[in-house]
Length: 150
Length: 111
Image (cartoon, rainbow over all chains, first blue to last red; front, side, top):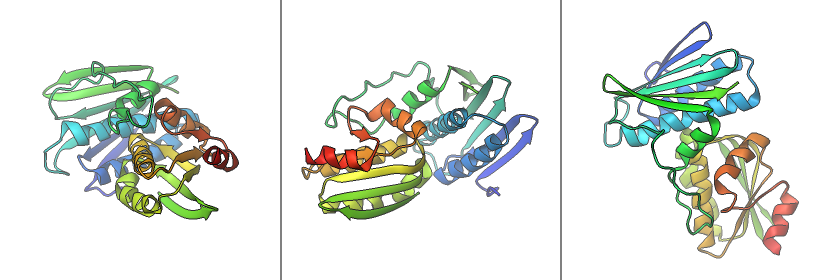
């Protein structure tokens, strides 16, 4: 069972609501809840992997960038995962400064170890997993929605 | 995530198991690098028991490869399950060689 200090969640029909905070342990707790939920949805291995990856990268970006400089474990990250007939819809919301991953530049892929940078990979993974990505700014929050094939 | 280090002749075999995600890598990144980098040897990385990889896992692999390359040692990955291989190929195929088997990995390091 997820630690309620790190993660709160509920399932309604084919929809998972997850509330975590800006802390890697909380991300881990949220991932465990997500995995349990996805396991009950009859999804392909690929769809499960891609959904977990998109969740991981979106939340990691919020923790490391949107909430950079802020006290850990104090700021909310809310996610909703909705399983539909042909797709999975993942929405992640945070209270950080405006950031639109749709518009964010993608760093060119390194062609050698010498050029390789350890950052900038998360957005690439998200874009590869998603069939569509959208960003809204709603009541001072970033809301990113990612659609994935089922 | 768990790891195991064993010698294969003059080469180090690093076997990784489980999820290479933010939580696991944050906990193990330094330990893994501290275990293999001082050896300064060519290294093959067995990914056959890795179930998931995210950008932080890739970061660990790149960091290890960088550190070993500074000691003139190379890294080859092998055995990644299909979805893990697909994710890795997206970002590192021109940086760290990845092959199917340990035999192929060792052959790359000795050519």
